Length: 183
Image 1 (tube, rainbow, N blue to C red):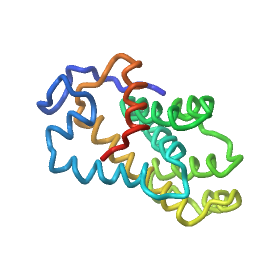
Image 2: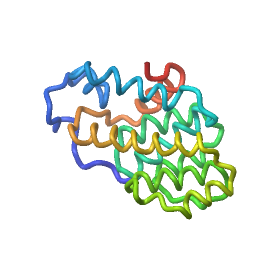
Image 3: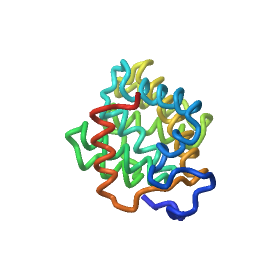
Image 4: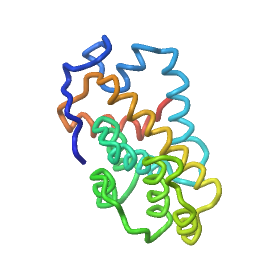
């Protein structure tokens, strides 16, 4: 994944430099943080036929394709903590297009289309997903995760809060997200 070109001192709003990424923005505007955290909690940890690890992987994929290093790294850490497939997580983190070979890769193709724009989800992409057993609820959840993470990515990259330079911090963030969620 190609990293964003801004540094930790380029924030567009006056956030606490001891806080990182979206957390700094949530503290800056707590009234918007409440529904945004609730949405993330519902999408990534609420009831779904998709595992939390697979949902984190979809969030990572969209974030990587949007070149949002903070979100791709933190959610990639969560996906790694929740899934037993480091190779797929690595490829998703790199924003690589994956061949549609199973339900998960079919859902990633759906997410890639939504990341590009809602109208980009063409009938053939949905048909391929259906051929791999994707249900209405799984399709819905993948589309909503992809749409929401495009918003989260634009929020973080658009306001440029302070972000960690130490990749090890993203691993710790991912482990925290995996164990504690978003509430």
